[in-house]
Length: 620
Ligand code: F6R
Image (tube, rainbow, N blue to C red):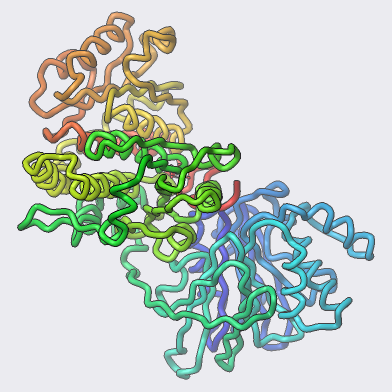
């Protein structure tokens, strides 16, 4: 939530910052702002309500010169989304401007204290308190910006990633983080060869210019200047040694590549993304699974008494599928917890429990807090994340990256299938060590898992007319999604996809739960999406369909390609190829992703940036 970008070097900062804000817009789009110091030493701040494009319009004809600047795209927490509450915020003397991602929990008492000392505030934000506090420290302790930031942050409770400009020192940027991500890119100007620095909430605004980055750690403060100096200390002023990391990402992954939306691109990219996810983890010749995270901690996994998976949203749905698979393959009890609930209970955790965090962004505040709690209680932590170098992988003992490439569309698609595959690989790797599957079954599952990317490609190719079909459902106010066993979480995921981007109310249920209440909702107006592959509980799902049909509900089914029985009972069907029961979710979710996409398009929604949502939920 909220994106930060910064630049200092020889180039004009404005184009770099605006491009960076566009790349970070998935993190929030309530307002945007920019701050630049021009060559006359003036510190300018421009802000606009709404998207980055509104900011671009608002600065037309204004002085946007300067080779140093910071910028911000906001997902509102404290104070409504308007221009006053937009970042950057000035300090009282207008000597400082600051951008912030996170939440300052004790901002109220801090504000009261500052007001007592004569400081006045323009906005309702916690961020303005921070910049005023820094200025207050500079004045009251007669110290420089760097030391003032250290002093200020010692008084702050909460999460922050910040970047600050100082008018009277136009050759430096100070930044810091705790609980919210911040990356520094280290580059060289192409013409002058002189050093330049970039700042980003993630690598996406940086990768175009340099692949050399430093991930700032919690409670670290950095200062960088035009001469190429980069100093990092912690809050106690102890010097830290920065570790330069080479990013494994390319620019093409951040572009739409000819698709109208990132979401559609990411849906179609799934076969290739999942081939990359599997690559190096399945030995095709030996039909074996090689997960270094398991090999390195073999005893932990063999002896573990219970696995607890903590996640939120779509990642929680993939975790449920992981539970079914791991329990079946490894005979280990698995609990799936909403991270936001887990962190505020007093959960019973034993030293022989393994807690797995599943998170695309690796930054979700609740998931991070849940594993921190589990760590305090002595659990072994394993992370399954997509964003490399993000906070969760850095906080866990071991883990696996999805390697499905950056996911920009706010509605998660390829990360979901990547998480399901990774959880299945994890289950297979543990089962192999524990010998809970016969060799024959193990090899059959490994073999089938390898074929999933091709089968997803088939599913995409054979459901191309969903766009025409989706038009019919734009008038609907409600949808129900049903599935059983492995496909119950798919029903939840299909419903979530529809509601988050089309704003149509949708609920997912285990199909057999219908008769315990929700069946009362069924009438001729109600579309019911049923995931009904020819597997395990097929006959029972067919009965559930009959129950809906006899109440005049409209049936949209996801069926195995040769199933004429359910096809004939349905108003519309999406086809998937046959696979093992446990891998059906990876195929069945594809038409549901497309359905939600095309219904949202038909309703004229902004699918990549749905209202009120942000990609990375770094606040609780
Ligand atoms: C839905 C969606 C969200 C995320 C949730 C967790 O499409 O994207 O529900 O799944 O906010 O995010 P991560 O996986 O980054 O922890």
